[in-house]
Image 1 (tube, rainbow, N blue to C red):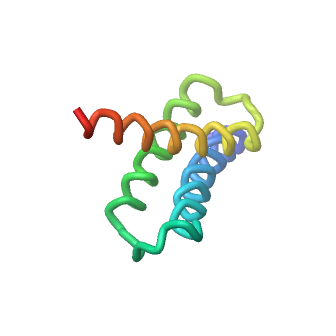
Image 2: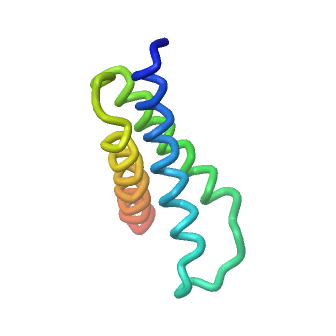
Amino acid sequence: MDTQMFLVILGALLGGVATATLGWLDAKTAEPFALRKFGMSVIRAGIAAAALALAAPGISPILAFLIGAGADTLGKTGQSILMKK
C-alpha cells in the first residue's frame, strides 16, 4: 500500500470519528457515551475509507476526511429513516 492510499484511508476514518465525537459532545444531547453508536460510526467510516481507497486512491486526504464525515452523517440519517418504518 502506498502512502497516498494510506492517507486517504486515514483521512476518511478520522472524518467519521470526528463526526461521531462532535455529535456526542453536542450540548443539546445530555446522554451518556454510547459505545454501540460510536462503534457504528467507526464502521460506517471504515466502509467509506475502503470504498475511497478502491475507487479514488489519488484524492486529497482532506477531501477524504470530508467524505468520511459525510458518509457517517448520511449513514446515521439513513439508518434512522429505515428504523422508523
